[in-house]
Length: 133
Image (cartoon, rainbow, N blue to C red; front, top):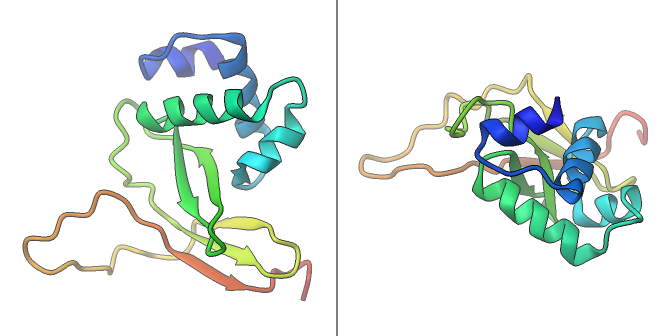
């Protein structure tokens, strides 16, 4: 139940939050703020943005920049605080302008120099998706 997802992350349920969460859950790929505006015509851009900001602060969503300066959002599936162990790469299609999760690309080989501590990861491959090639 969507209310349980919010509650488990310490967020009170409101109608706007449920609408945004449902839209993210139903999306089959990462979505932008503009995508959510189309998906949620009853909400204005600032309301959607406020919900996304809250969701980012409470580890309900991850965001990544898709290589053209646009943030994309997707649900975080970790319980409790997100430690980004589900970090994965993304593919951005330059023809259809869609972003795709690449869960099968291993990012564990990335090693940082001593003293560096990662707090997030954004890895985007740009090209042409299978539907457009």
